[in-house]
Length: 283
Length: 325
Image (tube, rainbow over all chains, first blue to last red; front, side, top):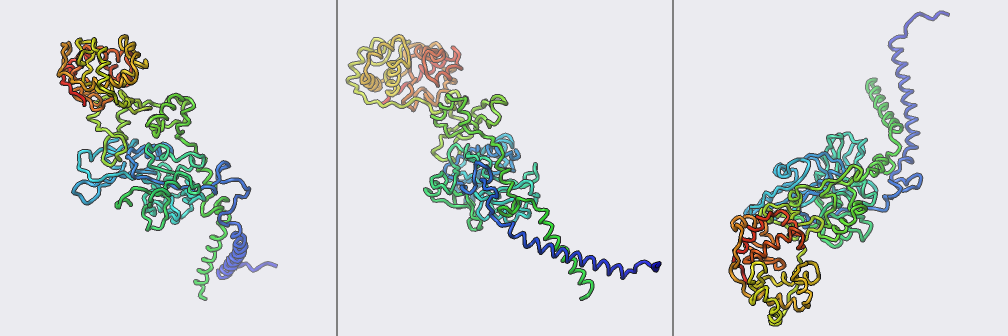
């Protein structure tokens, strides 16, 4: 029987598409509900390694360590060996403005109320060192009447409640089980939200890689039983590192034997770098 | 329900469905294993090769140097701080030996406000007269070794014993001769150290060695106390052959240990003011030739010509000495 030679009407086409969309949505909703039922079981946090082996490496089990860092600002001589060692160790771009760790100098001149603060990136100090690849503090207060002066080394505090981890949109930055805040370079999109969020200014954008970068406490060294590069080279022992779970580690003894404080405690990040000998202006 | 509202709700529902289903397929397996991050990035980060190797790595080949360094004050300054990272060494060749030592050493040792008092610091312009740090200091054992010996002798006993020394050194410790040194007013700690060195063989001198070997330790203490208490004469008696004015310019390099006019502040090192010039010339030449042994003086005398030596001797001989008490 010959069908009537008519094209489907506009209304008929629309009705058909609407039915198709409805069917697809319902099917999708069913599949979605099914996977939703499966997913919560599969995405449990702190899941134990499926094969029982130690994580992250076979020689290093992160559940046995909780890393901490101490800074004794009464010992720092401002030699900046730590800054250079960190740059060498971690491929940090060799310029004045990108650094994973830095040292600040606080100087009170006689008769002045306001403290003078500079760090190795100050142009005067860059001029003294001769290049942006090496670092030196210029002896600019040599002939001045100095009331009080001291150096304060600073680095990422690897906070227990890090603001940077909270704001990361992709999950590129995170806190490991052993207390180190790391950056996954393959997932970072370079939005710089974490750079903005960090109250200590510890993060920066690595322009060579296009991702956020920061001190990692030399994770690749500490998981091999070595110390972070800055701790290794400090000639006066101003930087102290160790396992907080071990009561005899250098950092545990440092915290126990000294009156320690942290920077910007009121911001709620619970930092894990403990300072001895800093002054009221240091924050 | 109006059609446009219904279609909008349907669209939203469609988006929600995609948003729920798609991550199940698009999320990497290790994500969510321990939290909101890709768990496999942790071993990736941990796998990076360390660049700084630590001093223990250097010890394998540079055993003697490592032993010297680790017994010194500089044991807290690891090798790689001055020589650079050891990754790839020795395969990639030698590590640099810093040429401009002063630029490196002053990074830590330049006197700077803010450095704690416990850090050894120097006023760079006044410390060495522009010489390199390594002229006097071995970077692997930088503390200058003249240990201060205790002097507790009896000068009466010393006076008795000194009768044997008068033939060369004079009845009152002022030598009759240009060649033999004045001892009157010399630092007692230095005298003890040098006599002990002659006795033990650390220093060798044709005349002094047998004489010192005949002395007991108590004799040495007594003699040193006696001579230190004597009055030195103003300037030296011998006629100096050099140019004292030229010597004065050179002597700026000696200020750190011997003082501006040859009167030093550290009693472990000898006073030079008013000393016999012939003796000074011989001693400097002996240091230069390695016949008289002192690690610091060896480095310093290496740079002196014979004319320099004569001029220095003339300068110091012409200075007024001062009695130690």
